[in-house]
Image (cartoon, rainbow, N blue to C red; front, side, top):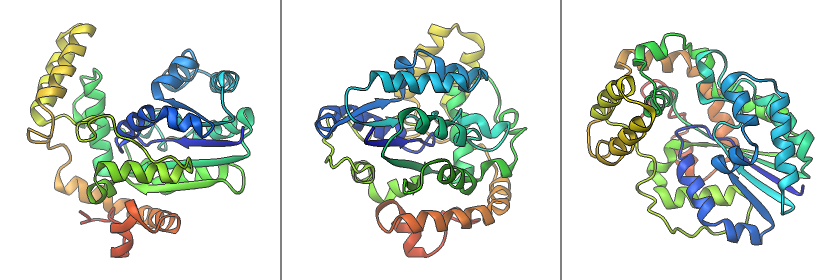
Length: 311
């Protein structure tokens, strides 16, 4: 393989927006010599091998088999994979370090695909907002846990982005490119420039076209939606839960209704204070690899937006 582009998430950092853009521009990307596998493509192609590993704790041999299937199905010399769970389940931080098996997965991918060049793109989000969004996503797909129940096993040490970035760097060949972005930059850039910057960082040399509504992608649950979903998830069968989810997405998102109040101000400050040294280290990693776009706000301020009191 000539070039492997891995967009590894994280969850709730614009991944759905990016994946819609990759799908919409698949033909233009193919003309540059790249196959494109977004999350559902990857899961369908690998026939559940990767899914069984990340969801049910199956052996890492399942990951090897999944990448072998990707290799054998390739129709171009280069490949883009965008999958927010490719390094592990997003909820790995409830039982250990965030995306703890990332190094093993990346080594397997390189052993199997043997790319001449690798680009890894990771978007991060401030940890207090990240855990809140992760919780809401679990409810969206059927969980009945309250937020305190969800957070009970979580410790700040497991939410260190800098550890994940260093692990990624150590797991791929020398000379590979790792681009780390603050998701919060989307507020400064807005959606289309955010996607354009993503495409620029991939090295695909493709200017994305937009054939979909970039302002209505994967909105979050409002407080009303959360309350309704918790009741519905406990009482409804699978198909009716799916119908409820579609209804809540369309009518009770956080765009039109008040967002849930999950972490208290004190809990938020406590988490960010505990993670301050880690987030300072992360900031050095972010700003050393980016001088424009999503990092502009942080670079111009000269400090991490993830420190206590950050907006």
